[in-house]
Length: 204
Image 1 (cartoon, one colour):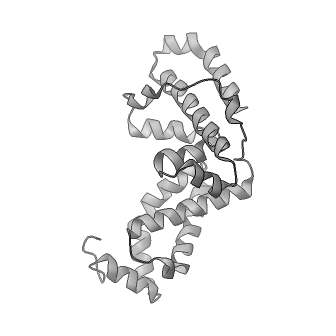
Image 2: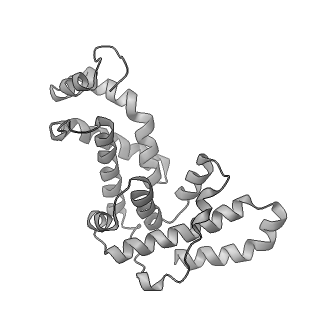
């Protein structure tokens, strides 16, 4: 449920106002969710200007498609799914995110202990945003949004094997970059060549 706000004391009343096309309801939704939804879009569109454009298009889609919200789940969750879909549409138009890597070409199994790093959430999200577009997209959909590889394959028009390989390579690259970030300056200098080779191998 929404916290108490002018005009709309419950989520149901806000949704009803949206379905009636009330402009004040549009304003409340935007003010309440803009920050969170910009963060969602930024995870897919690393360029902030692109993320802001996608977010605005996403809100327009929310207002246009509000009748499709059946109120059998969280309204915020539904808005989030709209934003993810809008982000994917943007990426598919750019055609730069499709990095097809057969699953049999994945030769390094990541050490999943990287997730227990002492890095804070901001640093980890920054590392995710630095991933190549294809890796970042699949990682976000699988690890953050909770979609299965079958669902991701359908959403992106790729095979399940490609989705799995993208995720595996994303984890390998994240693991390498987490270790690099946690090293001392002296360690980073000594390992620079190794990490450069790791990045090139996973990004190509």
